[in-house]
View (tube, rainbow, N blue to C red):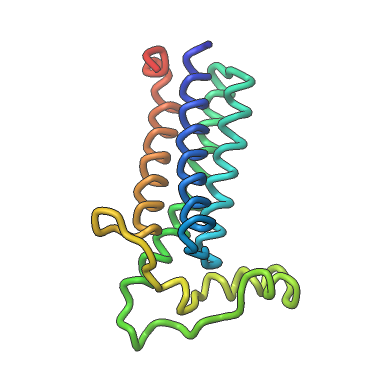
Length: 166
């Protein structure tokens, strides 16, 4: 495989592994995702789709920068959502917003723009820490991985000569 394909395949596999672990927590440990967690999953899925397209295409020069830029933008959006949720987690208990209805209900009843606004306003369920590893919560780990993906995408897109090694 061409070196850029290796990079995009590695990104797709990383995000696939992260999503798989999220589904493991949901379906085997009973930890239901909040609306902000679902939006983060959508960002990871977007990155997987872009990375798989890059893997199939094996881009060079301009298109390499396009794929890396798209991955970076999707990771920035996901990181912004994760950062917002981390902010909610660290609010004092009296400042945490009240719980809102589930995302499925909001999508059925409200227009999409209102649903997104309500989801980003946050709710009490988005501020609950249900699982930690090394004392970091799920949104904190998501923020970590989104940050690494942004750095990797920028490095891969800007410094073409580096992709020959990976």
